[in-house]
Length: 290
Image (cartoon, rainbow, N blue to C red; front, side, top):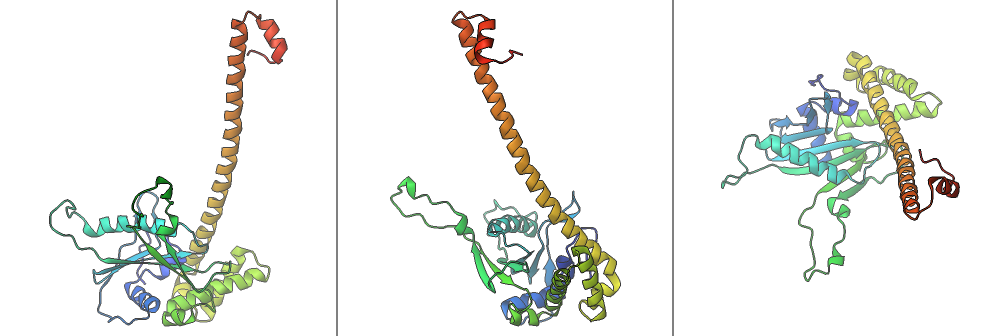
């Protein structure tokens, strides 16, 4: 399996870093069959500065179709907006140095968007997220013509947990095995193991039971490192969000103090102008001018 190890991968993106496997995955998602000789070119966005992946998977099929797939354990209601930003950057990569201001038409591959969900929370087998669901209502402007959506992006969300979308999962061997692997991790967590212990046990279980055998037999330690990185990254994001909220509260309190102090000083000056001495004013407000 070919993979650009220069960049940090998730286990999911690592597994689907091979054009042949991506072709099989797309056929499973669409319920179609593509010839093996149809070219698949990976164009996933890379963050060179942080040596990280920006999106999970994106690839072109025969230069006519571009597919973006995100793997999520929590479905983000803003996913359509995120994918809109991703596809814009991917189109920039695809057209390269072509002049978009040219009078000649530039043809671009048609996009398709998927989210593969395998989180703990209950979720239907399939759902659709739309960019238009995020648009604000402009009716208050009382326009003479009814406004219409001139920009739309639809994301198909597919639940890939064990027992969900079985027809799709069975058509892609790697996807079926990945689903089984995640299920094992959860099973061991329910047994009382820590997440780290559960991950280790699941990796070795899969190695001994022909689940993702090629991957874990040769790269067990790397798989564990990727899992731990994902886990620590998610935990870090939660901490940052919590700290941001706490910092926001502290900043708000401090701003309130500053504003109150400004008001007090303004009142102080007004009383000075009225002829009262500083000593009289301090007694009234019971605060130190300093």
